[in-house]
Image (cartoon, rainbow, N blue to C red; front, side, top):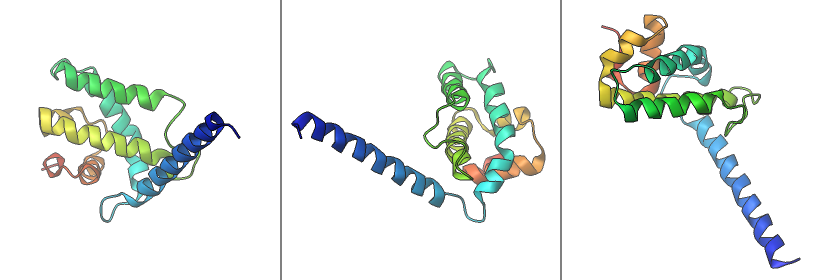
Length: 139
C-alpha cells in the first residue's frame, strides 16, 4: 500500500472515531432531570425563536449573524448527526440552539428572548433549564 493511501485511510478512520465520540458525547450531555425527548418537544419553538431573533434589528449585527448561521445550519439537509437516528438525530440541533441562546442572553439580556418566544411559558421554562439560563424563567 502506498503512503498516500495509508494517510487517506488514517484520516478517514480518525474522522469516524471523532464522529462516534461526538455521538456518545451528545447522548451523555444533558441537564439534570431533562431528557432529549423533552428537548425535541420544544425544538420547533426554539427554531422559530432563533429565526425571529435573527431578523430583529434591535440586536447587534454580530449577534444576528450568529443566529443566522444557526438557521442556515438547521436548514441544511446534512447534519453532524443525521436526523433519521432516533433521539440523537435532533440532539445536535437542540444543543447548538441552546449554546446560541445562552450566548444571546449574555449579550442582549433575557427580556428580548421572553418577548420573542413563540411557545408556552412551560416551554420557555424548559428552554431556560436546558440552556442553564435561570434568568429566562418566567416570573
